Amino acid sequence: MNVIEIILLAIVTFIFAIDQFSLTEIAYRPIVACPIIGAILGDVQTGLVIGGTYELMMIGNMPVGGAQPPNAVLGSVVAMIFAVKAKMDINAALGACMIFATFGQYVVTITFTVMSGLMSKADAAAEAGNPKGITNVCNISMLILGSLFAVISIIAYVGGIAMSGTLEALSTNASWFMGGLSAAGGMMRFVGFAILLKIMLANDMWGYLLAGFVCALVIGNIEALSSACLLLVAFVGIAIAINDFRVNGISKKVEEGGFSDGI
Image 1: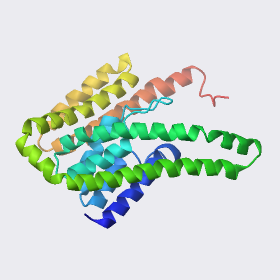
Image 2: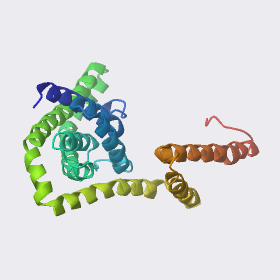
Image 3: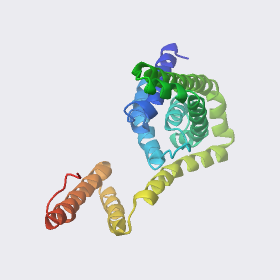
């Protein structure tokens, strides 16, 4: 057990927790957070793989009012600990981390519930023209949420190391269970992308979606290009988007009498 790793993990988890609601809302995303956690735990490669996969799992999950989706921060931390420290298969680690991600959802809800009682102080500070009072309420909110997440990350780190032997034995003696967990974790990325498509996909976009699958299949089976398959498909998508904007965006605006500033 490495004390430096524990301290650094607690610090970055604190930052990710408050970033999710109070800062840039970029650093906490798995595709950014997991490589950083991987650097702390000594395995950046695993961080990149889990970060990209977990981002697909969470890409369609959006908080709506008080309804919170499984928390991406705790999920990222626990998935990395299970994969790096407990030596779990990446898909199995992603499947197991969803339990903690769901628990993180309740931690956020509890924090919001506590903070709802302090909003009257922020209202009073606003009426009195006291920016410092509003800032203090915001700082208390960030301190509570960040501290809870940091403590949970430490518990996960210690527990992950302590259970590494048990999990390895489970992989050997109950391979059916770990195989099912890996299958569930492998499916989650498609579920996340399906949620996003359900929200965003319009009927006139189905052709582009199917064309993308064809491009990925063709390029992926060309040995010289397969390693850059996703990048090449992304460039094809960018080219189509630019062309569509020029044809259906700019041309349509010109026909309607030019661009409007919205005022």
